[in-house]
Amino acid sequence: MVLAQGVLGRGLAGAVTALVLLGVSGAHADDPYRQAAQAIADAGSQTVRSAFAAGPSEHRVPDGWYLVLSWSVPDPLRRELIAGARRLGATVVVNGLVGSSLNETIAAFRALATPEQAVPIVIDPIRIREWHVETSPTLVLKRDHRYLALSGGEPVDGLLRALALVNRNVRPTSEWLLRHPAPWWDPDRKDPRPLLPEVTASANHRGTRPGWPLVERPLDQALKERIRQVNWKSLTAAAQARLAERIAEGPGLTLPAATKARTRLVDPSARLTKDFSVNGTTLFKTGASMNPLADQNLRFRYLFIDGTDPRQVQLARKLAGAMSDEPPLRVVLLRGNWRQVAHQIKVKHVYWAQAPMLSRWQVERAPSLVTQRGVVLQVEEFPLGPAK
Image (cartoon, rainbow, N blue to C red):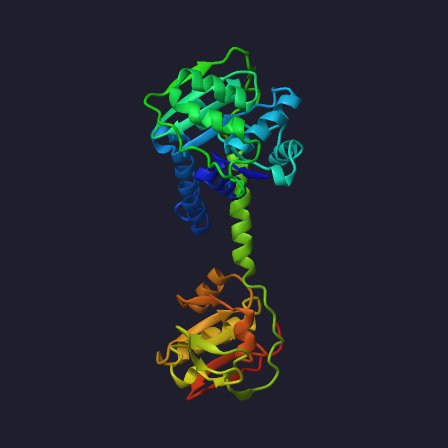
């Protein structure tokens, strides 16, 4: 069963999900956390407004056959309509969710047909409104920004015959459907489905049998109501608190504190586990050793510290003030609040450490200073005094 959400597919779901999860607004200019949250909120709000403002001119619907179906149609006819849509090659269009969730909707349609009998289904109240459909089932032919719609309480072949009576261009398709009980895309067909009939003007027609009302609530209206019910102030506060907490924690990496001065040389070479090729040309074979420092230089020296240890922060401040600017020093934080550490050390640049970097450079204790020495790295460990 293919369930493509027409409304959600135009970016509405992504915007709504982002806003509900982040729930950010009301930033204060003097707080960077709130500024970041406000920027996200502004972008999300603009996306939602754009999605809700989309009118018919912005709603592109592919040409083809469509069957508007509601769960108000009795079950035996619903199954017959699904089978008829499959034979015709029509997409089933639903106004909203069946029940209260997308999972219920998927389960409801799966119960009507086996996977081999599946048809494309979209939840798209916008196109239903554009076609001025009020009852189900309604067969719609859409072509070149125009449509023909016929409503009536009968199967697809009956709706197609009735539509052929009001528009003779539909007659070849109606006669073709009566001749072929198999799906329109069956490879064994000797007689392919006729091309889409020409539609000279949009029109709505009613068959001889009455249909049933569209009982599903339009999905876009349901989403708007959900947004109106969101407690944005509470979500804003929660998001800002989570953001501040995450920044305060830092990367969350830990290394044992250095207990004695130690300097080591580390070869950063890596051995290839498979051939390295560019545009089909093998440059390096499996097992070859590659040293990135043979072709490039590190632009900085890197000092790895634990920002929660005052001794290491003090050492970083001392080294930052004593060392020359060539190459510049970069403080890399294992854990702790980067804003506080940057303020204490009096530097502009503080970075988060990554586990692969520690492993590749063989940084085993903190604090450690990594400096390039030719084609190898020098890892210098600084012993710390007793904790205060």
